[in-house]
Amino acid sequence: MNEYTLIESFQAGDEFAFVGIYNRYKGPVFSFCYKMLHDSDSAEDVMQETFLRIYENRDRLIKTSAFKSWLFTIARNQCLNSIRKNGKLEGFSDENAEYIVTLDTPFSEMEKSDQVEFVTHFLNSLKPDYREILILREYQNLTYEEIGAITRTSVSAVKSRLFKARKKLAGLMESVLEKEQTTIVQKKLKISEAAPRQSEAADPFKIGEAIKKGKGIKN
Image 1 (cartoon, one colour):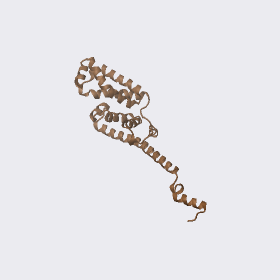
Image 2 (cartoon, one colour):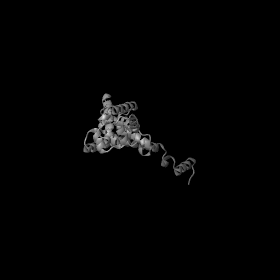
Image 3 (spheres, one colour):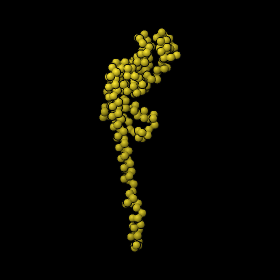
Image 4 (cartoon, helix red, strand yellow):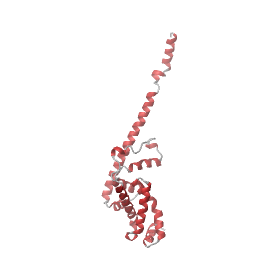
């Protein structure tokens, strides 16, 4: 059963269609909620509440083609309610954001999954309106129009906010990457300084000269 047929059947009261919708969208909705809330238990609760509201308000969906936007609008609103309840509207401060993650290996040498996890950590340092627009666009692959419908803003406003959010996220990541790169260089320098210098302690010619002088050997 294709998506539109599934949604139409659900609107007509088909309980099995709702199960199909739940199975199809629970993954994306949970992923969105988790990245917004950064807590798996809270994300699970919000996801369940989202589908409960979908089930109870099926008659409010006017256009079948708008289901995805409607679904994520409800999920977004529930996430924002949870964020307000826990007093995390501003995310972490800029001063603390760079300490969220430390790198054991350079970013370019990380596994793909580790790179994704690294970036995800910084999402929670953004304020919710930046966080949500990045998640909807970069992780859920929604169109500008769909994001505009979910956030109740114009397409131009979506593009502007997305640009600012990307710039902010890049700035937070850059501060850590630069710090870690500096640390790596410093560690290498310390290793170099600790190693014996060939001109002073490992030069075969100078060692030979010292031996000759000690034994009174003349050239």
